[in-house]
Length: 289
Image (cartoon, rainbow, N blue to C red; front, side, top):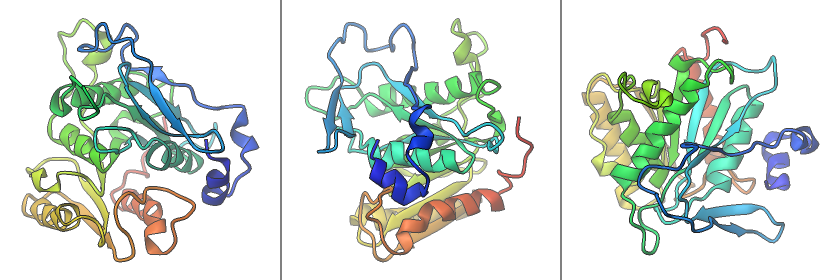
């Protein structure tokens, strides 16, 4: 973890987390379907301080849970999906930092490592393997909701860039569980209670239909045209479909700002706007399990 970033962002001593560093949980303990025989070791890129900033070569997809301290949990949970163009996972500023920020504020957060469809020589597909990882992550969290003090009805998804694509896909392609599944986890539903699309890729593909989960939309004015203008157009489609949505477009931001200590100005406060939106939607008012 980037201790300096956590100090700047959370304003709490890093030592508070030293005894409870989260450990990854495989989505499939016996290996992910479609990754049979893949034994390559995950590739990690680290900064000068030794903190992991990105990962690739993911063949054993996993969740890293960030659970709030006892008595602080609000029962709301967020699956966090980092971006990286489906080539890498920007796991620090779009993953771990977000998990820590949410945990400190009473949320249960779960950072997803999913399989990457566009890295060199990949055999994976976005709408097959990466989507399956996302759906499985939602099911796994719900299967352990009582243990993790999570309200299954208040589990949502947040995705950044390429991760935003997956957040949208699981919001549009989901179910309430597979009753005939042999795997007990697959009997739990994968429908999000809400979706947060943070400068999502392929914004033009976002075609909401009535009844889909409400959406929090966020991007920078200086982002690519297909993302900045695409997300603004997607907001109008949400409204036309009568799906509640809120759009934040920050004039001083481009692509990939995520959650960093170096963020200055209005876009640095997008996480607070997200929490306010959840409160307005009534997603923080329910009783904690």
